[in-house]
Length: 162
View 1 (tube, rainbow, N blue to C red):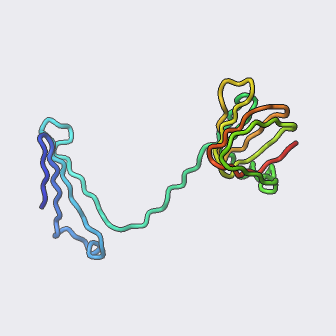
View 2 (view 1 turned 120 degrees about the horizontal axis):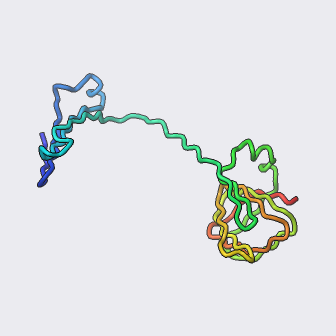
View 3 (view 1 turned 30 degrees about the horizontal axis):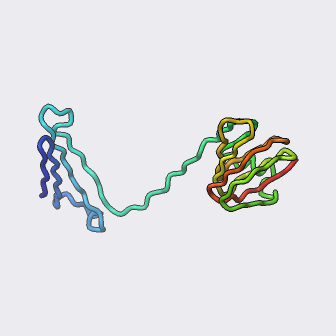
């Protein structure tokens, strides 16, 4: 039995060998822990039983929500569904990349691109704030737009001009 106490709370951890199941002999333990608070605390006398052992847990599947924003004439679709990328033929588009850098750019045609890697702040001329794009974004730049690209993480992208 082990006990650690503080001024107003006590934590009591008991290992009760008589409660060990056959599974416990295969590497698992039952640990009874008791939280002891002052008698006025709402959890006074509460007990919690926890089973500790080596187990494989399935990794949670996190599906990011698709969000579309339009700012300064730039349309950004964050986390587009794979069906949309397939419909557009994105994986068949040519690829372009660059290391971290800063440069001006003018779009002579509408460009749609899908960032595989990278992080960029695009500063459209005549705009007060940049548009941030990152890996996983599907982005449309309008024809005739002039801007400055500030690439903080090297870019690898598929692109298509219309």
